Amino acid sequence: MAQMTVQVVTPDGLKYDHHASFIHAVTKDGQIGILPGHINLIAPLEVDELKVRRVDDESHVDWIAVNGGIIEVKDDFITIIANSAERDRDIDVSRAERAKQRAERVLEEETKRVLEEATKSDRNDDVQRAQIALRRALNRINVGTKIR
Image (tube, rainbow, N blue to C red):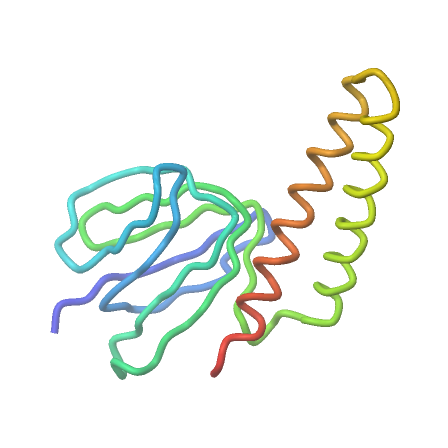
């Protein structure tokens, strides 16, 4: 069976290293499915889930919450360099839920302030940070609650 090597690297080091028969990722340009023999490419990743179907068993799927970064495909070797990444089994879902609630609260408060006041760039920065935090929390919750 044809296979690929998949590595996920973060500033904290190597987070994932296995052989795969299929990978699904979400890039800035949309979803991408990668099979062995895929053309070489480099693409920026969205904050989203990464699905890796392992070669040891077609039903064995690893889910990884990836928070941005890039994916490089070269000669059946896939490298994902991410700002952070967590496997489904390592995600503390209750912690992610709390982060989601904090981000939603900040977004609600900042949206009210922006509507009440003239638009200020520092307020926009707070809103953008809260939106990113919310997206990351939702991604972690989604991956952390996958059926294993």
